[in-house]
Amino acid sequence: MDFILDGFITAFHLLLSGNEETWSAVYATVYVSTLAILLTVLMGAPLGFLLGYCTFPGKRAVRLVVDTLLSFPTVVIGLIVYGLISRNGPLGDMGLLFTLQGIALGQVLLGLPVVIAMVANAVENADKRLQFTLLTLGADKAQQLAATLWEVRYHVMLATVAAYGRIVSEVGIAMMVGGNIKWHTRTITTAIALETGKGQFAMGVALGMVLMVVAFGVNISVSGLRRRAGR
Amino acid sequence: MHRFLLMLLLVALALPGAARAENPVLMMATTTSTDDTGLLDVLQPAFAADTGIDLRWTGVGTGKALELGKNCDVDVLLVHAPGAEKAFVEAGHGVNRVQLMYNDFVIVGPAADPAQVKGLSVRDALAKFAQTSTPFCSRGDDSGTHKKELGLWKEAGMAVPEKEAWYIQTGQGMLPTINVASEKGAYTLTDRGTFIKYEASHNGNPPMVILVEGDGALFNQYSGIAVNPEKCPNAKYDLAMKYIEWMASPATQKLIGEFSLMGKPLFVPNAGK
Image (cartoon, rainbow over all chains, first blue to last red; front, side):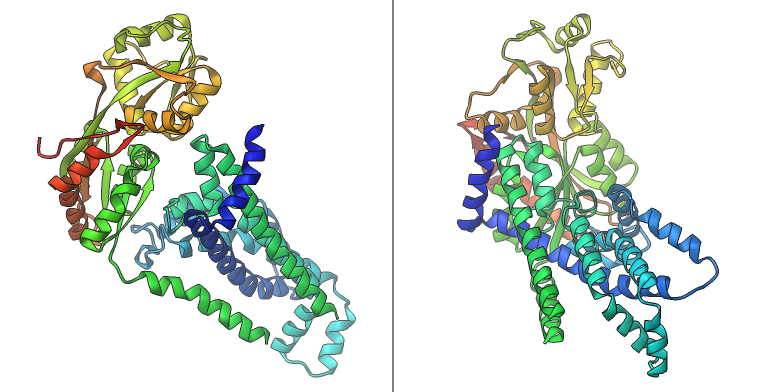
């Protein structure tokens, strides 16, 4: 049990002393999760809007698929992305394997269903009068999308935070696609897996603390944004 | 305002990609032992200083390393399973296999040695585990060490105890496997380099100790192999050859020989021998 207390102490030490390896992993984690969440929301919010707003044949089936993908195991995504971006794979020429961008690609696949499903739900449950109001005001398609997303902005933020939680804590994709390369693709989660495997539990706990601080910081800034937006 | 922040963020995200593109990058797949022991952390700065090449490695079992080479996902390999390596080269996946260094395998177990195997030959020790059903941890991950262990069972004239309750397959790297063995009071086969690292992380007083060593069957050769550029046009063959030549050069060989923990050398250089 000592290692948990040790971990606390080590965590503060690592962060405050500017330990290069730790900061490299923190940087990789923040870089990858920021890139992934940006792409996820930029693609997921409009797709979620379409899914919630439009009616088209097969909509129920699409919803079912999206809902199923909510529980897509990360190692399966890792495997699929590895197959895609391996040098012999269809996207091999892009040189994404063992890069942070490659990990981000996998994490976008992980986050997309969350954002699409939650935004679609929110749009479906939004005030039905909104659409008529927008139409009477002469809004075009893009304006309708923007206005509706603005109306459900809290849900979009909630979806973002939920997707971010999945993305930032993810280890399977980061390990398989990133390769856990020191100074380059070693994220906090893969570093935890490595240190724990080596029996360095205190170090693992310390990195776990660091990860929680990072995730906490992001959530606080999101709720700050939300408060500002609510004003 | 928001748009400005977003732009700033995007620029910040794009920067490292641009900044890193300066030096040529050599991608290597290697075994968990060279990675876990810290040998590569020592060699890499020297290699970067000598050649300006940015070496990046992923530490996986030899089986997976060979697989990554087969898929053209890496440029060079540093591995330790001579049989599998020769098959790899013969199949045309790799070229220019060069011996670089060696150490040896040891069987480690609880200091109390419940199966009484201290000082036995490998063959007798393995037989003892089977007779007494003493727990034994196998890597079970197709790594060089795992391949070696499978070979040792065969040499001892026994079937691999695949389904026996006392035979524990961890499916993990060497250090994790030693830790599992330690927790379960089991024995395991490890390379000496990784074990010295394990001893060092327990300040020289580990719960697991070396019980079987010095058997000729336990020799552990490490080699470098370049991925075949004819099969993998994208592989950086020139850089791979530079790396292998650099590893085999007298100066680097000296560095490898000098790499030690707690005063014990982990690898013995033997390029060109």
